[in-house]
Amino acid sequence: MTKREPSELERLAARAEALIERIEALLPSRPAAVDWDAAVAFRWRKRDGRGTLVPVRHPHAIGFSDLRGIDRQRTVVEQNTRQFVAGRPANNVLLTGARGTGKSSLVKAALNRFARDGLRLVEVDKHDLVDLQEITDLVAGRPERFIVFCDDLSFEASEPGYKALKVALDGSIAAPPENLLIYATSNRRHLMPEFMQENLEYRTVGDEIHPGETSEEKISLSERFGLWVSFWPFDQDEYLAIVDHWLARFGVGARAAEAARAEALQFALARGSRSGRVAWQFARDYAGRQGTAKARSARPGGGRGRRR
Image 1 (cartoon, one colour):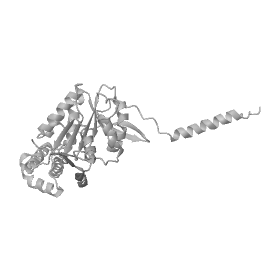
Image 2 (cartoon, rainbow, N blue to C red):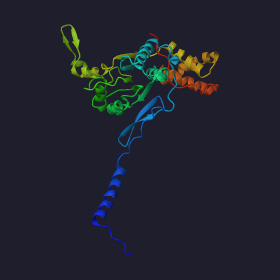
Image 3 (spheres, rainbow, N blue to C red):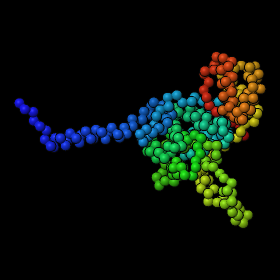
Image 4 (cartoon, one colour):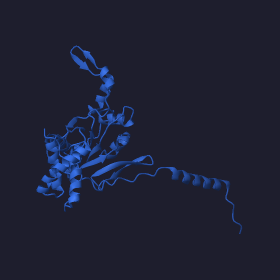
């Protein structure tokens, strides 16, 4: 019995099916559904042009007790976050000031404090802020409360994330979801570089000084954060107090910690900074060289802040 030759229609159908398979291989795969129970912290990651929330399996375990000394800053952030997880009105927060003084650590501590109350953290890189609306749509309607966390944030005026953040904070026709806030840290109070030339734009009206359009544009972004929390550099005594705290956390005894103070000051001098981060780095180095039993148990994080 002779085999029947495929008809022209069947050949066209076979070619179309092969073409569809080749096209599908080039298209980005559909992102997997978010496992909301997998973690309390997530990172927004993009692959093949599509973003998804990736669970952070081991977030930093720093607590408010490790941030002793920043009482005012802690009180402001803790109270605002407490209002948020309780379903009461709360503000977006901008934490600014000297590097290494505990800005991002305070946000992580807030997560660890309120995670059991339904708080979740979504870390978003500056370059992915253009996806804020997509993230908002993803979490809207969820029972958890979400903080979108942007660490070490700064912009140039031409960057697309700048406008996306302005819209997300307070600039869209759509109201932001009640279960989402934005917490950002930056070394710049207005999140953008400021130049001497901009001072020439200032004008006087009577006895009042008014900024120019360039300065007004830069201020307009930071103004959209309802709370500003400022941090200042540490003096020598405050730096040494942080060193003592972290040495104790790493299991170094009080007598050894006292002997390590001169070395801690030299360490800070070489780094050009007396900050909580430098204090933690010194304590980690010193404890490791001393071989203390608890050296592996301490978690990285910011130091103490300045008492105001």
